[in-house]
Length: 100
Image (tube, rainbow, N blue to C red; front, side):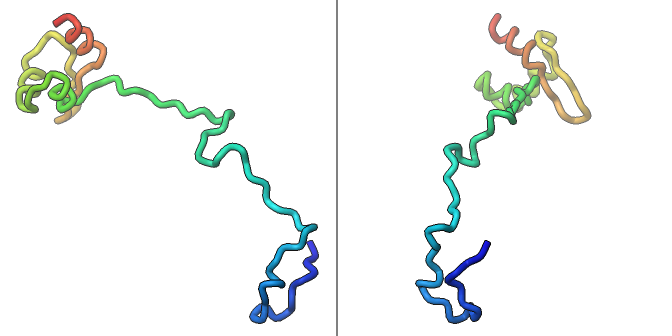
């Protein structure tokens, strides 16, 4: 694309040289900001299927130690042990909590 007002020595450019010619194409603003997900690309968020012990403690308004004791002794909801981690099935805990 030819530019008519550009000097060969760029160190001596003036404000007039930097003005955009009216015939120059300009960028159009998009109606949709770049931060919004497009209609084609849908973002799927998965909810966790388990609770951590600290989440159980918060839900029951008890201490973490009491929540660990509950998870270690209960047969009322499903507790999953993965190495040293303890997770509680969200469905079984919610069913138990609703019945209490």
